[in-house]
Amino acid sequence: MEIENCVKVPIQTYRTVLRAIKKWARERYVYGNTFSYPNGVCLAIMVARLCLVDFKLSSSKLFRLFFTFYRQWLARKDNIQPIYITANINPRNVNLAGMLPCWEQSKRREDLLPIINPAYPYVNAAHTVGRCSLHFFTEEVNRVCCILDECKLDTPYGVVWERYNPLGVFNCFLAVHVACRAPSDIQLATMFRSKKGYVESKLRFLIYALETTMTVRPISDRLALPQGPSVLPSKECVFLFGLRDFANEDRSFLPKHSYFTSYFNYLLEAVHHDMPADCLSSFDVPLFYTVHAPSDSYLTSLLR
Image (cartoon, rainbow, N blue to C red):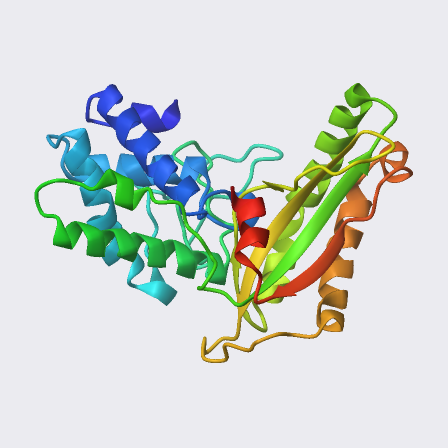
């Protein structure tokens, strides 16, 4: 609500553009702070900032402007200026117990993408965005700009929203597999939702660790596996990450399975640390494995 109060275009125009941008981000798998991408609040602020640039444009023109505007903004890479929609982001002379400090660029240089929430105290809504995720988000913005450069009159929404397929882009994948079994469907639904949530909430720590030694592209979705026969009701999901070397030159890039042990154990410890004892006692340990040169059928079963 605070964001919409800062918007000068008709509110329906703003909401239409935001829905279109969210659809693009979801289809291209560059959405959600769980996977260290910008989340819905970040995109809402980015669209609202755009509406302050020219509040007379239609929703279709604002949609096109989003990509050209942020192509230039994100081109600064290591020195991206804060995106905000308030008059300023200066701290106020207010001291309340428990209040978070306002975001200050001089003190938060580790933040790669500063998108400042308009509610006071001003904090960075994109503080979880990682190096690789920012790179691929920017890459997807540039992709749309290239499409729009070729289509000056009409926007080819079908092409812009085309579902991203990592097959052919990555030759090696890391998969984190979460499984749950329970005596009844009702118990299964509750347990799986809880356990999946605990793993999902810590995935960004695995991403941060991986990107120190390689390029990693998180596929920002919970991918369901086809269910096979089982004695007890069961549910499974997979979190998938495309991997390649920093230089993107070694097509045979395949780190050893043992290479990920420390990273995965770090994820597991983080999950177990916050998980209640009653949930932990019946927790199926999430498995991880690497997949080299995956078949079309394997990725199709996950990305369907």
